[in-house]
Length: 110
Image (cartoon, rainbow, N blue to C red; front, side, top):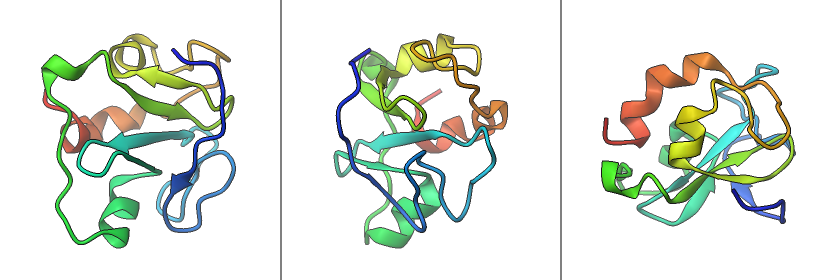
């Protein structure tokens, strides 16, 4: 986990908590760095609206990569730490949306 620094999160209607036009509940506060463009987007729809290439998933061997951004405290998390976090930021304890697990295959090799 890396301490907070300013990281830009891209997407449609993204606010300071990384919520976007597609996902904006109180718990939709993570952004994912896309391997294909080394850029944080609020969600896959935001990525697909912004770029003209298909997303590339993070492989199982890349679980130590800091690719998750907490929209509450702006810490970056390793993929493995995010998976182990039990739907809360391990740094600030802000609640993450448990429904995000349904989308893991869009971002990560499972």
